[in-house]
Image 1 (cartoon, helix red, strand yellow):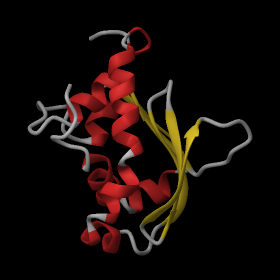
Image 2 (cartoon, rainbow, N blue to C red):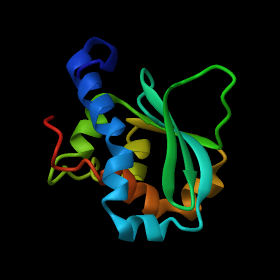
Image 3 (spheres, one colour):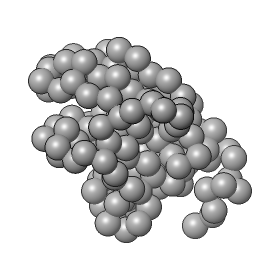
Image 4 (tube, rainbow, N blue to C red):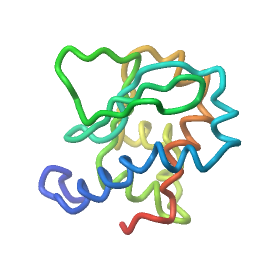
Amino acid sequence: MPDPVSDPPALDAVTAALSRLPALLEADPALVARGRFLTTQCLIGCPEAAFHLDIIEGRIIAMEPGPLLMRSFAFSYRARPEALLEYWRPMPRPGWHDLLALTKRGAAQLEGEMHPFVAHLQYFKDLLALPRGSVAP
């Protein structure tokens, strides 16, 4: 796999896809309803480019490019750009189809307080799958 630092087009594609998450989420009322008991702050993205998300009752109310110094968050989920691009294929290959599978293979890192992520695991899986099929790998 290419080095994520030396593959700017992949990083740009991931950043563009992640920046669309709030609009994609608002277009999916069932997913918003699934997250109605979730209120957290997290860092989602790639090691080189991530976003701080403020989620209140399942809605992304604020999203800022990061990581920002002195900005707190409960947990972070950061994956290599090529891993997210593979995850967003219409039919990802085995081992690239699931957020936890990406961590198991070393393509992603989950750090911090695990409770909000694990308690709302299906919400985060579905949230991060929203760009699936609309991103060119």
